[in-house]
Length: 394
Ligand SMILES: [Fe+2]
Ligand SMILES: [Fe+2]
Image (cartoon, rainbow, N blue to C red):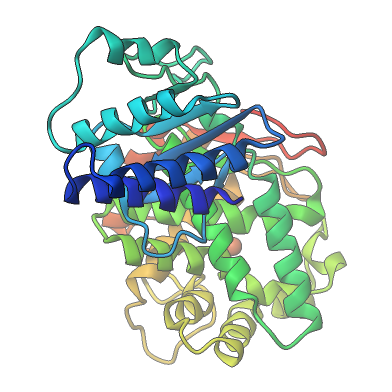
């Protein structure tokens, strides 16, 4: 039994309760069906947990992608049910009380009886998702009936799987004629969830384990930063997501650059520099040749090294304004590159990189975008997640 199947049955149960009065057989049937699915879902596991983050539904540390038009996540989150934990062994009575309580909340009639408060001690816990405070302590304690967010849950999104998937995507692009968009979107979706879970305090960024992982970790980081910045600049959900895809794919052209050139510690020859500077054109070509619907990603791949004053590369015959997404990715790209250890220099401290960006505003990078970016980073303390072979927490 899948988590999606159970959640859909829970939604059907709540919808049925809106249609039929208490005691109606349709209500009983929907509840029995949902409980049966829950019991099957719990077979072989100690607990089921689900979180509703923005419009996303996250089970464990994965966003569910097979929920179709299930739109209960924002509705449940809207009444303070951002996380639900259900232990194996939950009884049908406990589940019925839980569903009833949720339904009452959705209908503006929260249960306040002693029986409902007892839910805290039952096999089902639910309540707001509280983000861990910077410094490691658990979040503020939730009120009666609410679940105190598990300390460190948000930060246990390790992003290692996302990095591994990007690595695989790069391999696919190098060896086949396709751009695996399902995986690209899944990574961006997952990064978006990690960002939304942490954005009040932290921007989760990956730290480099080996130099040859630079392209992978950098792609994830630029995607997270571009989505955070686009959100802060007031863009809508769809645009934020498409800028995240563009951020993830901005350096795709680098897969054509030999590793020894990419990771060369010393000064580059003219020929090597020309190879590196061809990656925007190459990246745009790869995206355009494989995926028609990715116009923004192709433009960003092409323009992300072009400066406001016309400098950078590729060079245009006439100075022209770049796409908004390209200007966003340009800022995020420089910041992440500066804050990462490279073969030819150590990583800069965030503040030093921000000061550098501010000094380049108006010539190299967009002034307004840079100002908002620096505000965002200073307010959110980017947390770099070390890349190791073990699962890690921040
Ligand atoms: Fe680049
Ligand atoms: Fe880059």
